[in-house]
Length: 178
Image 1 (cartoon, one colour):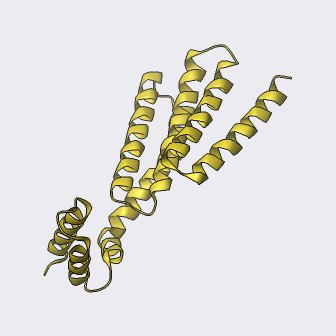
Image 2: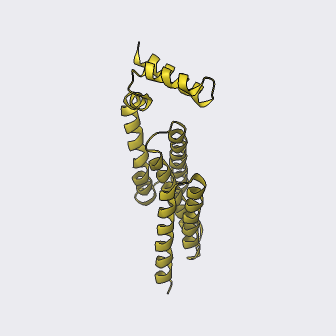
Image 3: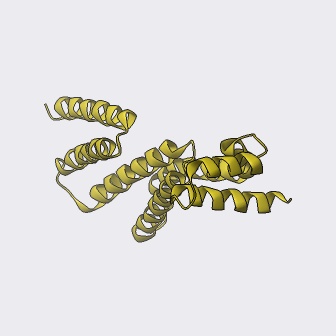
């Protein structure tokens, strides 16, 4: 049986298992049968390994690309904002897909999305607001949003990262404006 056909059958069995169309024991038996006892994770990992690594690499490269686009290019402000929004949309979609398929590196997609959201808001605030107190408030609001999202999704690491970032930003603001 071809690898593509096995992959489709395994996805279908997972769908049955997830939506309780068959008892879990039968689904586990069928999964063991079609993955030849290797388990579902190993089979999916070998099937998606190369495209997934390329996709993950592109996702991580969005962060330096966004820095390069906003700081080192001479393209118009409108185009810069559009590119930042496209990068943010791509990373958000990646997080959604990684979470849906329960990939191991879902947290990388989430962090990339949050960092790009922070970069985008800082970029927009720097270009449209003159008041120097607006930028620190926006940054702190981003970190509070990270904490709330981490709390909602029960992600302890994200909560810790957001608290540490919030504290460092508060110290920076205190020393900057005193």
